[in-house]
Image 1 (cartoon, rainbow, N blue to C red):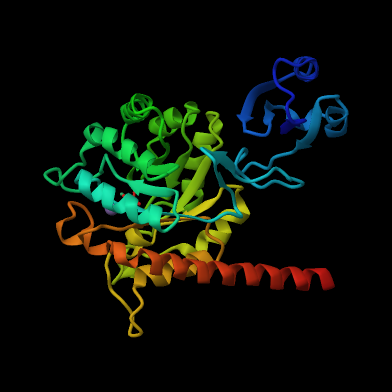
Image 2: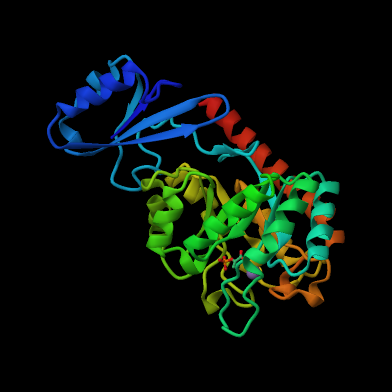
Length: 373
Ligand code: PEP
Ligand code: MN
């Protein structure tokens, strides 16, 4: 059960104390308080665990500070969509709103190689009116002798340049909890010119200890990629790990499944799951066309497969697109063959816009139908 307090009722208020006292008298009920501090308001939710079936929902709702009470089903207690669950989806971070209605493109380098390439990439993004990017500093590689990323050494110039070009959110994969501290320190040293969306990659989807640590910190939101070889349910439970530790600012990322059935793509594209994840949970959903397709193959009309699958995800309501670009793919140290070129950025963004318009029209069509019945 989740007790949602009225906006701006926090632990300092009498109404909050009244609710806690009321619950303290109920047997076998444990509580966990979750507070989301936004720019407009602070939302406090109290999660109840234990014998909640014996609680009277209407009675709890009659307490002065309570806005609503939601009874949760077993699946995805915090992130799930439950019966009568009008809780909003999404969150705001560093001036950018992420929800199941928004759409943001995170074009950028799979792996940071040189300062010059970072600057070229960010300049192109600024010129295209973009405020988000992806920049890999820590790279999980199959081969131990492959380039592992520049790590913390590149953070100072990545953050400085992000600030210079007006980037508000940088998606950056972490492989270990020490990386969170390194990112936080580097941001602080640089004067917080930008924000970071911590990315937990497909190889770490079920690294539960990493999930718990990323869930306990409140500084950064998290993009959790789906595990490449586990069920969707298992991956959504991994997201619930983050939320259960207190961090509800999570975006769920689809990036394809590892199976030869998806050949000739690098992974079997799973963007048909965009609406499924939006139905099962309140998380915004990201698609990663680059790691799904893994090449610059194109269809007879000349459109790249990466762009085809992007359009497929966006037309189905995706909220974020994580996509690899590189100023000089031939010299890229990681994933050059799948990278789009900087000259293709405006074209890519236009193509995304077309797919998004089609999605908006499909929604409007559905609403017209619903209003008639
Ligand atoms: C990435 O986005 O750079 C990446 C390694 O993705 P994934 O974890 O989906 O393989
Ligand atoms: Mn990659």
